[in-house]
Length: 343
Ligand code: SF4
Image 1 (cartoon, rainbow, N blue to C red):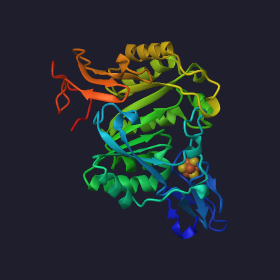
Image 2 (cartoon, rainbow, N blue to C red):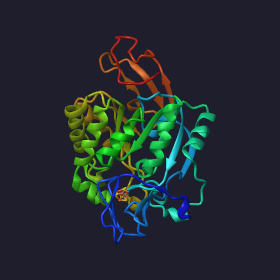
Image 3 (spheres, protein in one colour):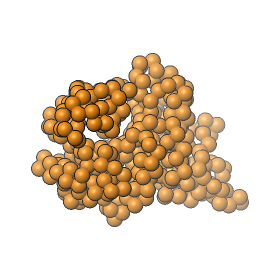
C-alpha cells in the first residue's frame, strides 16, 4: 500500500519524539505502536510517528433487509444499503468471518471508496438507510464517521453495529451521526470476554451501552446463546436484569443460536430448548421485547404490544409485516407507545 494513500487516524498520542513511538486511544487496548508497526487490530499503523488508518475506505457494499443487522425496531421491513467494513479489535472464538476480521490490510485487493462515492452508491440504490456492520465498523472509525456525517447531511438514516469495546470519546463523537445502534454482547463476565475474545470487558462495554442509551438513539442488544460460552438461561436472566435496572425494560434484546465456526467448529449448534429457556429468563426479568433469532417462523420473532399483547409486527424468517401499529409507533388497539421508529 502506497504511503501517500494512507489516511491519518485520530485518537492517538505521540509518546516519544525521538523513537517516534505512539499510543492509539481508539479502544481500551490502548496499543503502544512503534515506528513501522501495527496495532492489535492490524488496521492502524505507525508511519513515521503518525498513526494511519490502513482500512480507510475498505468496504463491501450490499443491499439487505434491515432485519439482517439484528435490528427489529428501526424501520422494520426496510431495505438498507450496508457497508461491511474490515478488521476487529476482538478475536472471538465463534467469529463468523475471521478472514475479514483479521485481514492483513496489505493483502486487500478490493476497491477503496471515498465517503462521497459510498454515499452516491447508497443513494443510487434508493435506500433511505445506511448501515455499517461487519467486521467491526469502529475500527475504520474515521471512514465510518466521515461517511455517516455525509449520510446525515443528505437526509439518510444511519445504523451502526458494534461490539462496543471502544473509548468513550470516539463513541460520543460517532453518536452525533447515527440514529440507531445494535450492539453485540459476547459474554456476560469480564473473564468470559478474556476466554472467548482474547480481551474486552463487559464492565467497560456496559458503560458504553449506557452512553448510547442516554444519548436517546435507538439501541438494540444482542447475545449469542450457547452452553460452551456459559451464555445460558442464567446469563440471559442476569443480563436482562441489568438492562431493566440500568437502562429500560423497552430496550430490545436479541438471543441467537451459535453457528459453529472458526474456533468453535466442533460445537453443536445451540438447542431450541436452551434458546427458549434463555428467552423466558429474559422475559421473567421484565424485558418487554425479547427475540430469538434463528428459529425460523417461531413466535418469538414477532413484536407484541407489552400492554395488550396485540401482534404488532409479524416476522417470518426475514419476511416482515408491520401490522397493527401507527406510523407514530402506537399500538392500534390500546394506543400504548412502542419503542420503535417507523418514520
Ligand atoms: S483500535 Fe486497534 S490499534 Fe487502536 S488501541 Fe484498539 S486494537 Fe490497538
